Amino acid sequence: MDVRAQLAEKFGDVTMFRTCEQCGCCSSACPITGLKGFNVRRIVRHVELDLAKEISETPFPWYCTACGRCETVCPNGIAILDIMRPLRAMAPQEFVPDTEAPCMAECPAGIDVPGYLRLIAEGKPREACLLILEKVPFPGVLGRVCTHPCETKCRRGEVNQPISICALKRYAADKAGAFSRGDFNIGKDTGLRVAVVGSGPAGLTAAFYLRKKGHQVTVFEEREKPGGMMRYGIPAYRLPVDVLEREISQILDLGIELKTNVRLGKDLGLDDLKTFNAVFLAMGLPLSRRIKIEGQELPGVMWGLDFLRSVREGKNIELNSRVLVVGGGNVAVDVALTAVRLGAGDVTMACLERFDEMPANPWEIEMAREEGVKIMPSWGPGRILGENGMVSGVELIRCASVFDERGNFCPAFGDETITFPADQVILAIGQAADLTPLTGKDGVRVERNLIIVDPETQETNLKGVFAGGDGAGGPGILVGAIAAGRRAAGSIDRYLGGDGRVDDPCAERDSSGYDGKRDKGFADLTRTSVPHLSVNERIRGFSEVELCLAEDDAVREAKRCLQCDMERSLALRLRQT
Image (cartoon, rainbow, N blue to C red):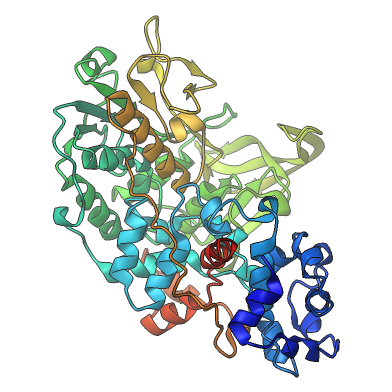
C-alpha cells in the first residue's frame, strides 16, 4: 500500500503536506510526545520526504491516540490524523493491537465498552444496557461496585483522564430500567438439568447463561434470599437492595428455579446432586477468616463479614463511641464506614500494611478519611484487652514489613507496642469458606480451602461437577466472579453436548461510516465528575453515596471516547484496499 496514494485519493493533492514548517507545535501539544520515542512532527516529516514506508514499519503510528490535539494547533491546518491512519494500515501485523480496545481486553468479562459508550453518546441507554447484558447479567450492580480495571487501560488517560466507564455502565442500567423474559433469546428446552450451588455473582451468572441455552437450572441458596456477598457483604450505601433485586429477578424470571434455606452438608449432599446432569459449585467465600488472638471471646469483639451481614439483615447492632477495625482491605473499609453510619463516634482502622500498600481501593480509603475514619498503618493486633468483662482496648505491635523478598505474605514485627483504647473491635482480615461437606473419599479435591478446578474448563476432579468464583479462585473482584460464572456455563453447556457459546459475540466493527473526525475541543474535554452525597448527608444513614450521571453529562462523557476499536477496524479496512 502506498501511503501517498492513500492521501492523494483522500485530498487530491498531497503537496499540502509539504507545507509543514517543522515548527513543532504538534509535538508540543501531543500528550504522548516522548513516549517510547514518539514524535508526531517527525512522522509528518517522514511522509514529506517520501519515507513513509520507513516510519510505517515501526510501532510509532499505533502509539498515537488519535485525539486530534495536534491538528488543532497546526498553523497550516495539516490533517495529521489522516496521515497517521494509512501509516497504521501499512504497519506489520506484529504492531497491530490484538484486541478491539485496551479497555475490553482488561475487562475480565470482555464487555464491549466502546460499543456501549457509542450507544450512550447517541442517546440510546437501553440499547447500551442490552449490549452490556450480552456479557454480564448485573450491569446495575457492576456500575456501582466494580473496581473498573478497564479504566486503568483506557487510552483517553494518555490524553488527560480516562473515561468514567463504570459510571456510564450504571447510567445505562438505571435509565434502561427492568428487562423482561422477551428481551432475551432463550434456546429450545434441552431437558437437561443443572444444579447451581450458591446464588452469588458466579452462581447466578452461570444460571443465567445456562438457562439461555435451554437447560433447566435449579439454584440452591443456604440463606433466606439470593445474592450472596452482593446482598450480605456489600453495604447499602454502595449497593441499594432494590437494584440488586431487580437484576436478580431478571435472571430468575427466565425460568430458573430457586430453593433457599438449603444448606450444603445438612439439607443437600453430593449424592443429591448426582441426580442432575451437571453441577456448578459457586459458594464463594462467605465466612470471615479467623485468627486465634487472646481476648477474642470478650463481648464487643466481632468479625468483619458477620458484622456486615448482620447489618444487611436488619439486626440491631449497638456501637459505643470507640471502634477499632483491624484490617486494610475493602471489607475493612466497608466495616469502618458502616460503623460510622451506626453512630460510632470514633472509628479507627489498624492494618499491617504501610499506607501505600493497603489492599483497599484508593478511592475507598479516601472516602473513609473524608468521613472521619482514622487510619493507623503498619500496626498489627497482639491481643485484645478487657476490663470488667468487656473490651477495653487492643495491644498493637509495630509491623516492620508485610511481604518477604519474593512478594509472599510474611509479616515481620518489631518490638514497639502500644495500647489502643477501644470499646469494640471488629476483625476484618480476610474471607473463608466451609468446604467440609464437599470433601471426603469420593469428594471434591480441595487445597488451601479452595476448590481445585481445571483452569480451562473449571471442572473439578468429579466428572460433571464444575466450580468457580471466589470459592475456586480465591478472593477477587466482583466482575471476575461474574466472568468465571459465564466461563463455567460455557464449559457445562459443552459437557452437556452443546456448542459452549453461552454469550452473544460482540458485534463486528463496521468502520465504513467512521471518518474519525474530532469535534473542536475534543482533546481538551475533561472527565465528568460523578455526583456524590455530601459527607454530612452520607454519615446520617445508608443512602447511596454515588449518584447517577445526568443525561447531558453522560452523553458528554461518552463522547470523550477515542473509539480505539473503530480506529483499529479502520486501519484493518485500509489494509485491504
